[in-house]
Length: 160
Length: 424
Image (cartoon, rainbow over the protein chains, first blue to last red):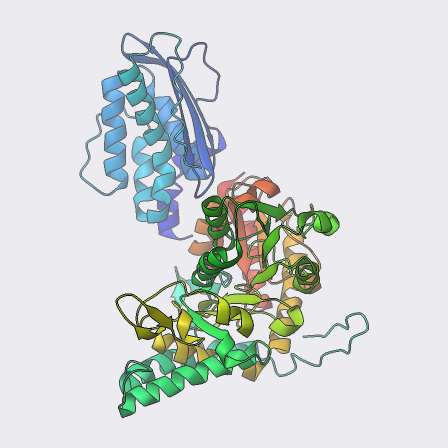
């Protein structure tokens, strides 16, 4: 098998793809966002509950290719107990990592580094980015709207 | 290779002189390895590869004949003009022996349809009129009509498809009304492979006074096309899908229509007399060829037509029927794999879209690429069709003259290996 292919589809990635995390509905949603990639049909529904500025629980339902599904699953797994600020820094650094720029990931970021192999496949970078961009969109709306507990913000991008 | 008789028609004795290995040798690009495997190029519906004859024609033009056409009075200009116009005549012959004035060189199928949507829109469309397309159109034959309908407050309708991926013509008489001014449809679908009954639809459309446009981007490279027999008013296609260079397309239009149609692009070459307050147009075809055209492309396109005609369109069609039959049979044996479009190779072309129930088309494409197999994955510029099929995307393998059963076998083997790799 091609070495490059295994670099992208690492065992960790395939494991997340086969059994994605973050699929359990959550009791409460403080912000929600939808991500959609019309070029390949990948989409993600994201719902997040926040307590005192910290992610309490997360629901991330990705429908799409192995990379976008695994990326959303990895994100769902790692975000719990991170502050909103930490989540923003994480997402920004995942973006840098995928674009081949200098990036910095703190310790204990779960399987995020397994996504790095995707950068060798330029056309697939957007698959890996979808979940993280959707998260940033959700946080942006959460912050600007000063959403109260229980409010739902839709950030449907209107791509289609 | 075998031939199959069709109802009441004589068996066309073809494919005997069809030597795929010999053809492959004419395409330098095919001799390479990709990711450590023999390149298996199955993305022909997107673009075809080029034989050495076409590549050489481009080089030869720039090495010996390069000059701007129609205006210069020197030897090179005359030579370039003569070759460019010779190619036009050759194209006219290729699509059924029409007049050379009826052949407009464009930038491609998209360019041709944009020209028509603008010029026809200016000339014949008013508010409340109707444009009819089909549900299986490529965005190239869809977006321009959506835009025109909006611009003119006209109504865009479409012929739906059946679950078998062919046009549902049961309501054709209701869909084409006296208000229908333009009927624009694909001759062959780039997703389903379906060959549409253009002649039948054109007949109904003409009875109601509509103008008929066929998008031949997929049909022209793969089957004999006679625009007079099809009865269309306009026929558009691209050179690059039929061994020719990119950046060049053809718009055929009936002479009397082209003569009255207003131009789309304006500028040099397409004029006769220019004043600050008045301009007269050049005669056809030049009225529609503003600016310096892709001269090298047009000249190399004649080399492509030479190559194709040496094999013969009937032989090419038969080869693809055989290969499509083989591919559909083999792909059908993969448990759960869903194939779109008609299964009868006689009513379809060789573009075969398929989906795996558990593996996204983009993962399919990436995996196949690691095996040296090039296919297309995505919505194939046909989002409304994808919605009708209930898919977000499909994988598509599409064949041409240099493909054979070994290529189909490589595809099928790789798809089986892929399932093991992803373990789903």
